[in-house]
Image 1 (cartoon, rainbow, N blue to C red):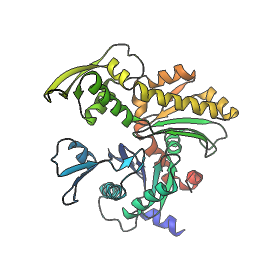
Image 2: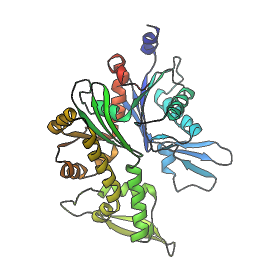
Image 3: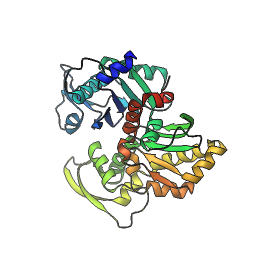
Image 4: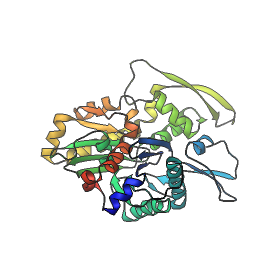
Length: 340
């Protein structure tokens, strides 16, 4: 009763603490923050210079004294102190003022997170000012955000392609019947583009530009109409800046291996899913969520490889955050999805 009374007066939150981006859902308001998971720090004074979008904007454009850090790697905390600072900044930005009653917080975390990693997330959130922290698996949150009936006794399959991990899960009656997590996702695709440009074009480009190119002309299958984009990089041999054109076929070749890993993870999950749940998936297909779902033609490729209907969640980038938000809105109904 006391906890419910405190929740009435507090601004409870849900968070998709992602490798690439952090999204915050405010109870009663929806997703109110979506910023890169980046922190800029002065190495000499250890002072935080910028967080989120402001920090991302100065990547590659700062002096030697400033370092930009992505404190999460493969979906889990790699730098505890910087993560705590980042969470505190995002919470204060959302709440806009000091809160008298500390907020309750639901955090989406990768499947298979270790007990040490769980503790790191909880302690970082507590230091940032949260009152009670509940953890929910990212694919479970993505399935809820996609509107799947996870409480029903039949199979719901979700493929959540984030920045650091791809999570494949089959869910039934509030429980994960099978899950597969591979540490290949959006970041690996960006790195594959960087390597391709160095190997095939003898050019060095930034990771930020590689991500932009991926989202602009990246695809998993040939496009109906070929596309190209002009980008600026630095020649490896001369070090001179140069603008050059890259085509969709080049980017498709560059990201071919990461895409193949994701496809194989989906096929493995289907092979290992119990027969009755597999029959449900055969009837309804499965859903894609996360930023990787926006790669053009990925749904077509998965359909070709599995012969199943592939659905893309509405606004896949925010599916995990909206799912975690639904949990904070209906705590009693979704209580079974919390990780112990």
